[in-house]
Image (tube, rainbow, N blue to C red; front, top):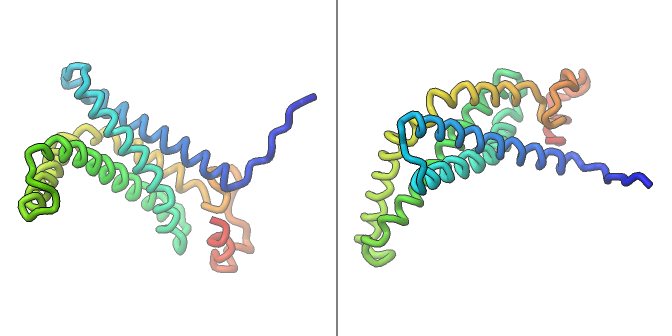
Length: 193
């Protein structure tokens, strides 16, 4: 007897594709950072593993948040150029923002041993200045690991997203939006996102 699979709902397919996209993006970001670190003759040690884990987690979380953000940004402008721009901007800000935030958390955890008691005035100032220092260090040492090698990957992700129409998920082969949806002002497409 042949085993039959239950048909997957569109939401399950979308979540599965989102998970695959996020893991792929996280792996790509990690590979870019790894290649830059190895190119700079950094030793393969625990510190590099921590850096790569931060970049992987930042890439995954950034991609998971970039897709719904890009979909929301193009609800009223479904043109391919708007979809491309929305994904590139969302993926850039999500990846850099979450990677920087994870770097800050790691940095703050290290310096927290020298901070004052929590929720005191000195602790607030120390936390703020530790955060400012973490942002500066990430901007100077972390961002160069991603750029310029990450820019072509951003464009590929934006191109893949621009070839879809939100209603159908990641299936550019379905062709253009049917005529009936264009006349309704896109209201039918919005309800199915």
